[in-house]
Length: 301
Image 1 (cartoon, one colour):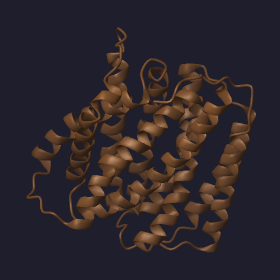
Image 2: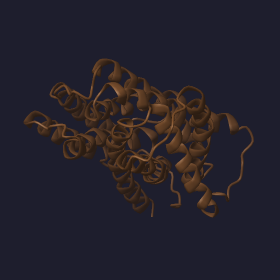
Image 3: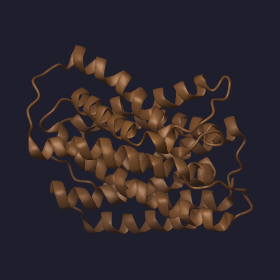
């Protein structure tokens, strides 16, 4: 039963990474028409609306005294600070390069989870990292500059800062996931995100909103499919696997982003990048070799 839960969690995490990879493309399309704050605020409003419609699926929960501070840290780090940094990052760099920066997340989470949660890092995890990090570096160095990236260095540094907030979020999520369902935690993120971004957008980025089909549908996709499904799958994966092991799947995001950026944004893939993709996939597969690190058996939401 536990093995089955782990298997489904792994499949769900791959799905979440695929959806998150597509989010960089959708974000880039939306930013071609709307400002970063408007895009994120609209995304959070769409997500909140979806969760209000699905209230019966996540409202059955029991609050644990003192958890408000952990819930606040979780939501402040992601979506609030994370989306703010990522939206600005994509103003300056390509979707491909921003996706590549996600590769540092497992290392940051491994350090934080070890210090804060006392999680053991299995040897295959480190072997997997040893394969993926060179692959990510290779992928990054082989990327060609794009006209849509006026300041790639600044954009990549903003995306790196976003990864720090994502690491703190993941550790807080791991603690909370033993008390609350993945869907409830995702709903908290959506509502907190709306409360954070809508006032900011009204104050600092108020603009007449017009319906531009591709950009508008991208925002709706970000707020519904990405926020609801990707975060739900990721939050569930964190419950079943330890934080360090689950975040190894984020190394798939640069791969999926690179492929979709080629298909939708005409960002080219060269032979070196293709070989780097193989190295990244190999590292993720190795990191998932079964070890004696215990998993927490839970029911799917």
